Amino acid sequence: MYRPLPEGLMIKKSSIQGHGLVTTKFIEKGTNLGVSHLKINGMLVRTPLGGFVNHSDQPNCIKSKVLVTSLDNPEIKFDYTKYSLVSLRPIKAWEELTCKYTFYDIKDKAK
Image 1 (tube, one colour):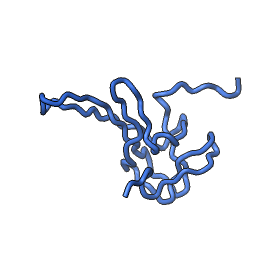
Image 2 (cartoon, helix red, strand yellow):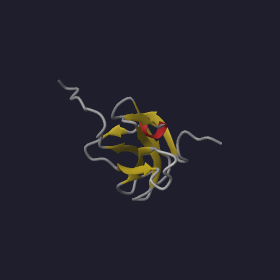
Image 3 (tube, rainbow, N blue to C red):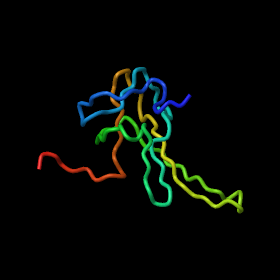
Image 4 (spheres, one colour):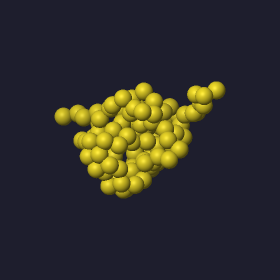
């Protein structure tokens, strides 16, 4: 059965901005939470996981980058990059998951 978010994660109203991604259970440091973004032919695609992670200058998660290529099969040519969300530290239950945005410009809302 398809699950748009990994077990133990849910979307809730955020104290940071709009809605955010919250864990309902403890997450250990170094846990791979799943694919958050794909970059295919220069186009960035967000998964449901990547669509609700809010920015923080002190994030509890980081995007881990993996290049996927068809070098082993010359008959099929493809290259794309996938980014997984990985916890930087232990995260308590009901804590919002955050990462430092690197794909988007952050505008200062106070201006």
